[in-house]
Length: 202
Image (tube, rainbow, N blue to C red):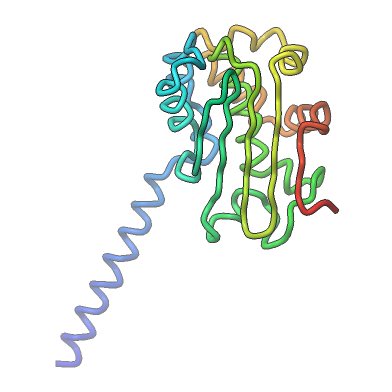
């Protein structure tokens, strides 16, 4: 009887382990989540006056499972992200501590990639968007990134000005050549340091 029970337990453990391996193999690498050019290309020309379309667009951007709010106020779009406590380390790289601007962990984090990606994606696809506010909250920190069209257009490199013309171009130029490149994220946040507020301040 004991051998039978032990045999059944072994089978159960084996099936559970196998399911976990298969599930993890099915999860795309985090970098792939940012390659949403098909979403951006489909929404090019969307107006902020079409609130429903803007909300639909924002909800299809990467990591929308942590999106807790999106609103349109005139020509301003506001977005709020609040990850679960379990997922906070993946978002900020702070490992249970307050975010520190400028350190490698923040610049390599999901949050820095998301801010850069969402900013470029929305200003490239929504022609009459004048201001974007991205808010992030977790148990240790609050982050606000505020950007307007004039400043982002002054920054936008020529090779990505028309990158929303096709899904493949957006993925290749905006995501692979900019958002996922550490040195270019560093330049982005250095240029827009005044747009980024992190609380508590260090």
